[in-house]
Image 1 (cartoon, rainbow, N blue to C red):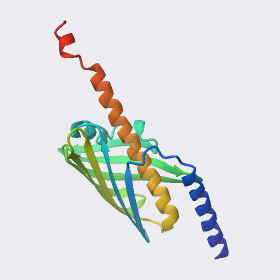
Image 2 (image 1 turned 180 degrees about the vertical axis):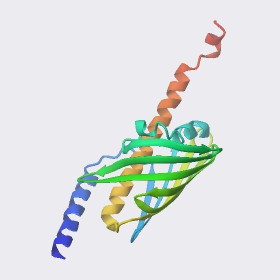
Image 3 (image 1 turned 90 degrees about the horizontal axis):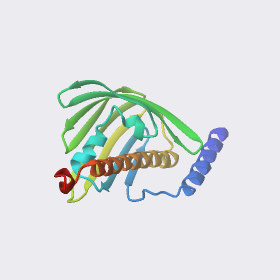
Image 4 (image 1 turned 45 degrees about the horizontal axis):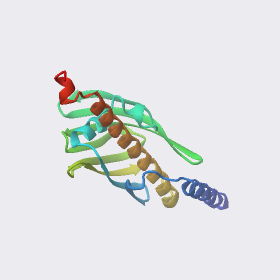
Length: 199
């Protein structure tokens, strides 16, 4: 019992030290994590200076997602049926002194440019359901993300909250960077009206 308490204390100190040393560049990405036993609820909201179509292309690019989301080692589409996909992803979430390997096969239902619904079929969690909404705010798109998961193991609330908040915020920060990167690349490669006419 004393050993377990001591380990929890040490993990807490290490996590809090890492958190204080992390000068976040993405504070506008609002992440709320609620942990109750094995249940974890995550809500995220933030804006991207891009259209819903530009955001959609990145959020649904499952074949290349491991190229721009650093905690993913593999991401691929297993099957497609209309607007329903089956995808497989695996990776490792890392923060401070701890790492957490994960993998899942999920059913993804797409409502183009508006909503993405996700349901885990198999993986190292007992349950995971999520929804991502895209809202046009005129000149930018607001992303609203919600997920409910039931973990295989109990997660210490304070330590787990810091860990999950960090990983979720980093993941969406990387996705936003990719959206902006592609938007700029598209703009620079599109000829102006005068150059298109040869003037």
